[in-house]
Length: 104
Image 1 (tube, helix red, strand yellow):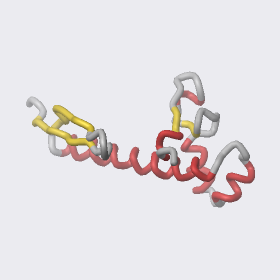
Image 2: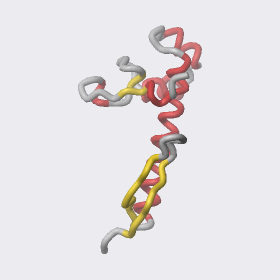
Image 3: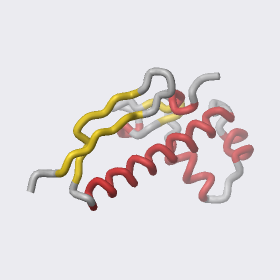
């Protein structure tokens, strides 16, 4: 099965460079907005036949990852540290981060 987040594409000339589903003109934020507005996943898929259920999963995963990055950014800012190096494990995809204090 295709990794969910890989279904999300960002193209500078499409929808202002916002993250879209598989190159379609439907953004992550469109889908989240429809869900937040009370539409069910089934209703969204019905109204937008180019979307697939796997796109919904990709939207949820992408939104969760964005939230995680924002939490990390805030922790770095609050603690006056920065990421000095990172390395991604090729098997698991996990990141190993090394930190250092910001110069004062």
